[in-house]
Image: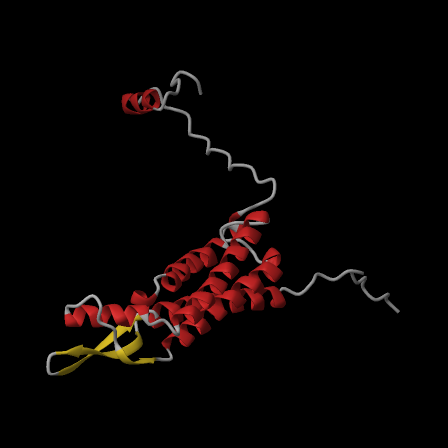
Length: 211
């Protein structure tokens, strides 16, 4: 009977876990940044400003309350792309930056969830008096949705820190270890009976007298 073929003692590790974590980080980071950028453009607080003959409704958007979540979302999105453009220590640093952006978004959103200064400023502008404050202030759920987006960014960063060393880079498929440049194609010898070819050879810096 023929002997069974030899099998490697150490089979290559599967690539599916690395690809799955890579896809998860991309999805979490992109979704988190999109949620934050959407939520900061919505109304975070509403109120009523005293006016002649009654009150005027006023509101404050997320960008008026704090500009930090939107800025951190953009930085986190750039860090998410940079994770695949760098390697080793650079990838770890960028991954930590991504996680910190998510944590910063959460902190800023939670702090802004109870903020009243922005809606008071809107009331002062509506009434024309700097001392005017808004009445019956109510807060919406958009700050907490912003915090949720920050949590997604944080998870993407933590996943990149834990698994990023196994992920391929953008240019990995084009790299070849020890690759040498392709040799230049050899040109056909110049026919001295054709003056046009002689001039072309001289333009290329070649000696048309050598074959």
